[in-house]
Image (cartoon, rainbow, N blue to C red; front, top):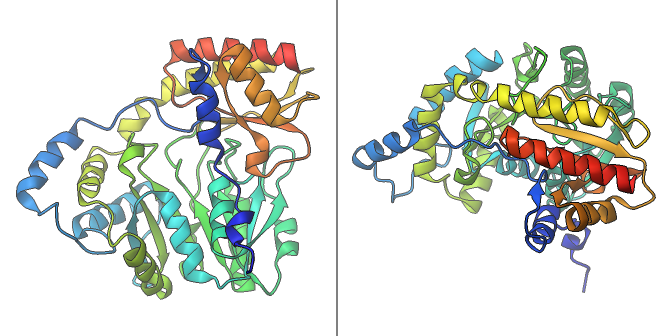
Length: 385
């Protein structure tokens, strides 16, 4: 019997860390990446209204309800400078992760390669392996920025796509327009796809600009963009995302989505529609509190140069920290939970194994709780690093 390729897929780390947190009462989590705020109140009103407007209990279009797709096109043009053309399509998905799986399955055959920049988002690496493809890892620089020459050098005849994430999970880096244009041009020249994850497109600090590669003229035929409602509108549990894809892969994506899901939950689609009518000012109202938590984290960690190396994150709500420790990252995470009651994620799950790294997520906490969690983290790092 041939070995199951699922054996090569890493096990999700968040449930493991979650169990350790459960077993250590009083622990505050800086682990899972979620926003602290709920959806807009308009969501509840929209769901009530939808009960009389559409049969929520029936199947609807695989690609998404037309009203939502129409409003998404307006949002993309206004917020991301992506002007939809006849050679592009919007597909509503059950979260951005599903959009990534759709994309990989639609453009690859078993044995193909997908380039991931490290640190990578672990679900991307898992999806590539589940599809029977090989992730090819290209390191970012010491500031967690892209290195286009290394990306170009990693492309082989088996390469089908390069994946970028900006604002980035897990580092919080935002990639400059010039670097994203360079990667997109490499993909165009080499006849492969540029998959760009923009799940955090509303989360930037210090007035750092966010650039969407799909806004580049003549990039539509090789650019796949992924978006999410989970962070910006507090809809993580509703599972709502969307993708902008070349028209030429639409049929393949629809086949995959119809087989896997048939269509995203209709109630969630009406919730997403209500969120878009509120607009990005909703999440921007909460961004100052996240920025306060970010600044407190940076201030405290910045006082510990002998214990850790800090790269200032410009977006999302993560910090990727290199720790001077003789412990492995997993041992450090478990000890921080059991002895200091603060939870974070190990860097190795994001593909970084040349030292001890931690991903710190500060988006889930109000500033009072975040303050306590940061104090515990600093105390633990001083003791263990």
